[in-house]
Amino acid sequence: MDNIQKPVYGFITEKAPPSHDGYSNIYLHDINRRKSYTEKNRIGICSGPHWKAFPGGFERIVPMLTGIPENSAVIMDELGFLENESPEFCNAVLRIFNGNYNVIAAIKTQDTPFLSVLRSHSRTTIYYLEREKRDEVYKELKKTIVGLFQ
Image (cartoon, rainbow, N blue to C red; front, top):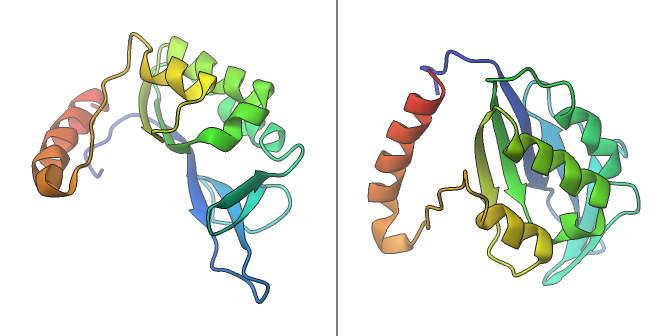
């Protein structure tokens, strides 16, 4: 990533360690800021296979995806099924996908309307990180990323 010569924007998702009750908070962090763990960027909670988005959680993240200069690199790690509950957030992501940006996004494999649109987008190239081919895929991705962001 040291070779990136464009401004970089976007977010990373983090599942915090479980609290005493067994639930983990889920946060979206702006990649250009120090990580914070507040209501402002807490988007949901999970316990095992049970995940739940907080009302308004994704809507509070939308400003992170607005005002990004064209030709910038945008990283979205990750996009999953919880986002389906926020049309405003989905629209902000689609504006980026449809715009003049270089996007790297981790898209979950669940079958939701939002994720299906992203995976079938004309500017989307999908890389599957299968255990046996992971090193090959990483090498290919590194070349692609360096080329896109120069």
